[in-house]
Length: 200
Length: 218
Image 1: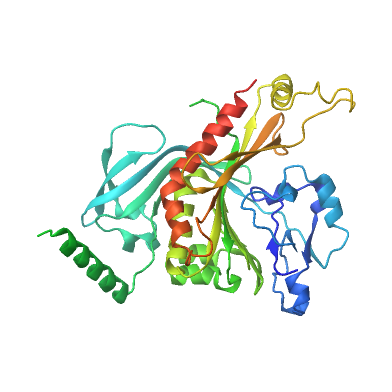
Image 2: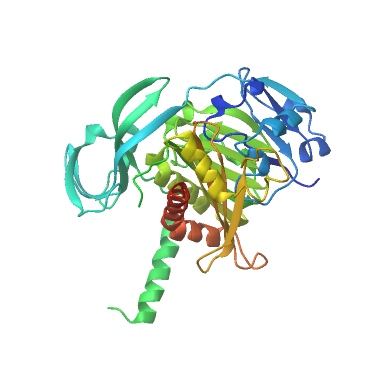
C-alpha cells in the first residue's frame, strides 16, 4: 500500500452520524503502519473526535462509496479492526441561513468609513454603492481595507445549538502576501509585455 | 431557476496531488494571513500527524493526507471565501504537484410529501425492471457520470440518494471533476488553480442546476 487517504464519513454534520458512531474509529492502515510510525506519535486532543479511516489510495475527487449518505453496513464493517478508539464529542455546528449576499469592492477609504460598490450575489440587479463604518469590520480585517480590496457581505441568520440570531458578516478577501522580489518580477514581466505590445 | 432551495448544502474542494500534511496547520494559515488569528486560536484540531491533518473552524473543515487535500464549508456565505483560501494557499505553495480537482456540492432537498419522494425515486430508477427480481425494490443510491461540457479534462459525476438528514428528503452530490491536460508535463499546481478560478462560478451554477432539475423530476 503506497499511500493513504482520509475518508470523511460526513463532512457536513459530523454530530449526526449514525448512533453506532458514538465512539469513532480511526483505522491507521497502509502508509502509517507500513512505515512503522509509532502510534504514540499521533497527536490528538483528549476529547478528540477523529472520525475517519486511512485506507487504500484513491484518486477520486468526489465522495468515495463509503462517504455515501447510506453508511450503515459500511460503518459496521469499519468497526471490525479499529486501531485507535476516540470518543466522539458531539460538536455544535453553526448554520448560516443566508438572506442576501453581496460582493463588494472598496473604492474610497475615509477616516472612519469606506465606500464600496456592491454586486448582489443573491439576485441579479444593478450594482449599488454603500458606505460602511470601519467599526463594522472585524478588527483583524481592518488592515485589508484598501482601495480595490474585495470583500463579501452576507446578511442572514446564524443558528447555533438551537439559537437563531440575525447577523451581518463582512469578510475581506485574503490573498497571499507577495514578496518584494515577486512584485519586482511581475513588474518586469509587465514591462516586457508593454514593450512587445509597443504601448506608451 | 427553481424556487426550491436545499435545506442543507455545502461545498467541498478536493485536490489530488502530493502534499505535506504537516504544513497545513491553523498557525501556518495565520502566519500567511489567510485566516484570522482569532479563528486559528479557536480551531478545533482533530489530528496533526505527518500523514494526516484534520481541523475545523466555525465555517471550515480541512483534511489533508499525503495525496489529498480537502477543504469544505456548509455555510453558503463562505463559498467564495473557501475558494479564495484554497487559491491563496496554493498560490503560496505553487510547486505542489496537483493533478486533479473536484469542486463538489452537496445538497439536501426536502420533498413536500412521501409520495413525491417515492415518485422521484421511481422516475430516476424505474422499478418495473426490478419487480420480478426483488420484493419492494427501492432506490438507495444512483450514480450517473457524464462527460465534461467544456474544454477541460475530467467528468461530472452525480449521486442521488435518500437524505439521511431530512425526511422525506433527497441528497444530491455533484462531483465536478477536473484533471490537468497532461499530467507528465504539468508543473506544480498553476493549471489546476487557474481552473479553479476560471471554473468556480460555472461549477457551482452547474451543480445547482443539476440539483434543481433532478428535484423537479416528479
